[in-house]
Amino acid sequence: MFDETKFTHITRNLFLTLSANGRLADTHKVIGSYEELIQASKGIVKAVVISSEPLKKKSFDAVKEAIVKIVGSGKTVEVSEQVDEKILGGLQVLVGDKFIDLSVATRVNSLTKTLDSSA
Image (tube, rainbow, N blue to C red; front, side, top):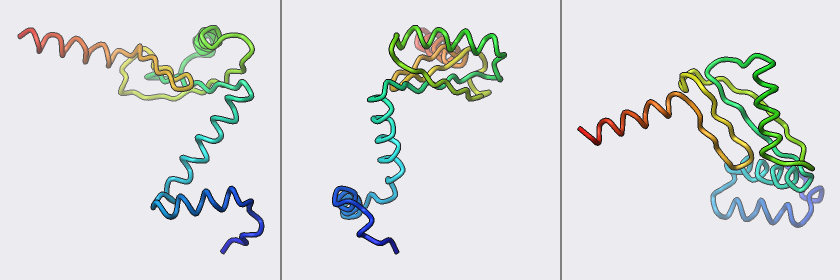
């Protein structure tokens, strides 16, 4: 058990509220959101680049440079990379809470829906 005297009254109240609402399992989400707010206040923006295969350094650097231009000056951009073969090709980019989908899979799905609706 935790020693309650080691926590501030704000922290205790947070956990009491989470517990009273059956949300203790969501503690990691609360912590993640808090970390995002702290980083935003420091001018740090996180970005995730998703591709169908690992990007070569030159390509990754070009994408990172484009993200920095989108975010603007005065902010620090932390870019990470993920691989998802399901997107078939192209890129998906998550910058803060904005999602840019340039994947082949999305284009194929869009064309399929268009063709299905016209038939």
